[in-house]
Image (cartoon, rainbow over all chains, first blue to last red; front, side, top):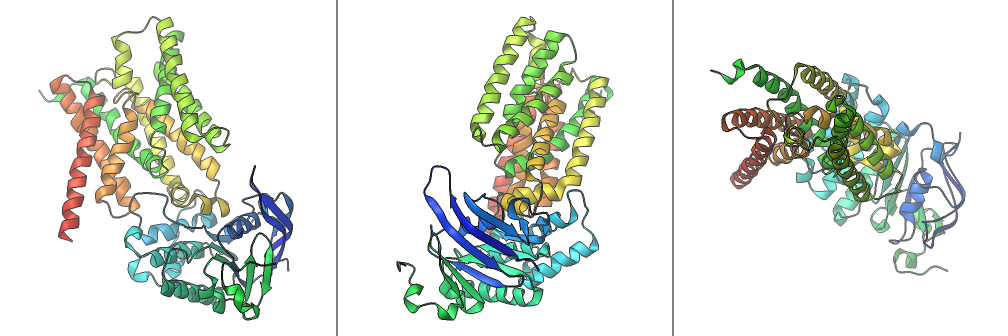
Length: 239
Length: 269
């Protein structure tokens, strides 16, 4: 079975900028639950964007399920939550409306919502614990609840790969832990590959199988329990 | 005598019905995607199309439609390829359109009162042929929005998420730009090229103050658009005013009312 995500010797620099990633190798097996951690500016988001084929590496290659990431043919199978995901619009949007849009990649542009689609939407909302708020206007919910709604939108695509960029940013510590616990439960229940990037990895490391620490390059990759204690300090300088 | 007994008013109201429904429906997606001004830009390109029609001696509505669609696709192409920033692409088309229009219209010797009916609308100028075109394009536009509603909404809510999931965001942006162009061409007889963008934007802003979901926002905006057109046309007839200005002022008034209602509702809750 091909790897869910495979980066080989990936280096990346934005036009006119310094190198953000240097010689990164990363292999994520299908069904793994991986946290990508590191300081702000360390390259977590860039790594995810290269892995998803949104950015082309300046050197090296990126693949999704054995296909070149930029030309991946089964994109409807990816659930993605961008960094600081927030509504791009000012109009009132209900939780159900947001989550329903997660079915678009599976239904196609013109496909109407079937009873099956609606059931999947309600199930996704229930999985993140927002059934009571399904008709509520998203903007009136707390930051943590809004993030849960976006996660439900990603789940509505019934993805094989769920990628979340800083889903715990901007929410309090309790909400961070609750979100990490939710992701762990979803990973267990859905058997999907889950990759999420987090600056505050202290709150999430006990829920994941594997922690990858990125500071321009991968400086740690393994069981979170094996992470040296001093490395929990985000200001720690690695050799 | 009722104004509906007059042929030209019946034509104006019939065409206005499509305009009042279509403009806010398309405008909803423009407003949410922070593209409110694109309607203005495309309107100016449509003006060049009207001028070309005069110069060539053919239907200005048809030439405006062609110019507006080409201009809309060009703006989207420039924007998507990042060759030009969005506002710069708009400015480029905006000023080229209006300048080209002025040059062509003066070359055609048509700098006259008839031109003003295209700029600010007129209740006297809607012909049976116009109504057929407006009805066909208006119905097609509303049908396309209904078909693509969820895909357009998915792109408006989370463009990057949609792109990652394989939704053809670029193609949807082109479709939205083309729908904007069609709306402008359809509306210019009633509201006028210079004011139609306001009918796409103001009802949506007003509706979002009091709505409780995306769906309710769109339906309320369409109701406000339709109400604005009907009130505007009636006022325009009795007060002998250009309908475009009255319709847009009614829309602006609806925003004031909606804002006041929203403030009242918040105080009560």
